[in-house]
Length: 186
Image (cartoon, one colour):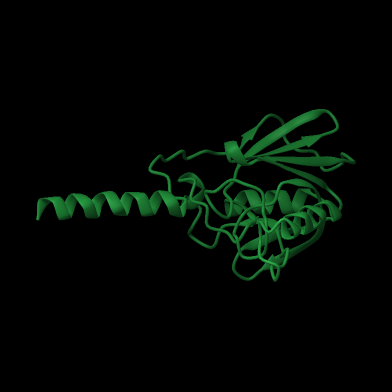
């Protein structure tokens, strides 16, 4: 009986780890170097998946860093619709909207021509199914209500988007214009 309990605990821990849950609480808050000034003409974002960070830059350099989470704990490039992976590459914010579930949403121009070329190459090599689609609707958005703790615990829960705490998503939404460049790194 004791071995069954031990096995159950081990299996549960493995399942939580595979789902993207981390046992380490980071309670990370945005690190603000200077107060963002809305009169600057250009902002850019660099998202570092391996460090769970979104860094905001202006013409003078680094402005602030926000903690983020992604679609899946498998931190590889998005291959096709439904894989829950977050794409890697160069993007732009193409629209801003308020999503009923995810709050402030900055839509990215995924898939770009580069993404489509990678997608078609993977298809022709048989890496992904011939009936696969590239997907779309990738953006930067808030957590669902009362789920900011997902960011604190590195819980990757999205369908491939980048998610941050609700207050940070609103801050970015208010600050960044359509056309802002976004780089997503592994």
